Amino acid sequence: MKRRVVSRLAAFGPLDDDEIDHLSSMGEGVRVYERGDVILASDRRDDRLELLLDGWVASTVELANGTRQIVTINLPGDLLGLPGLGVRRPIDTVIALNRVTVCAIRAQSVWELFETWPKLALRLFLVTQEERVMAMERLALVGQAPAQ
Image (tube, rainbow, N blue to C red):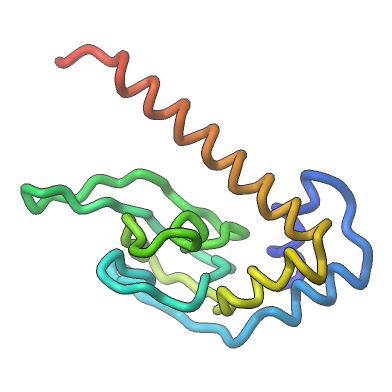
């Protein structure tokens, strides 16, 4: 798990051993999901995030006509459920695209980073900003695509 946690955050600067140990201690158990399983649902507020250890998942948004739009493909090292952390009701549903392994992390543990490990919290914030920029870029590309 350490390698998966560190890989994303270390892109914004090196992590020391204490930070790596703290991140690893945030994990609360490993789960395995099969293809098509819902990992996090938009119709319920979870008190956890999931660190994707192995496999691929899709973050999807259900539309009013009953169809589903894939908005993000998540790969190992991604933290699932992060976009919904600060809202009352998450907009996306996270679905396993193949057999996946995740590690649960209590949302409260993430909030506590801001008080006790501000450097880690900053890196986590920067990861979310990176994801936001990618989403904005995709939206701009879709907005300029021809209707055909």
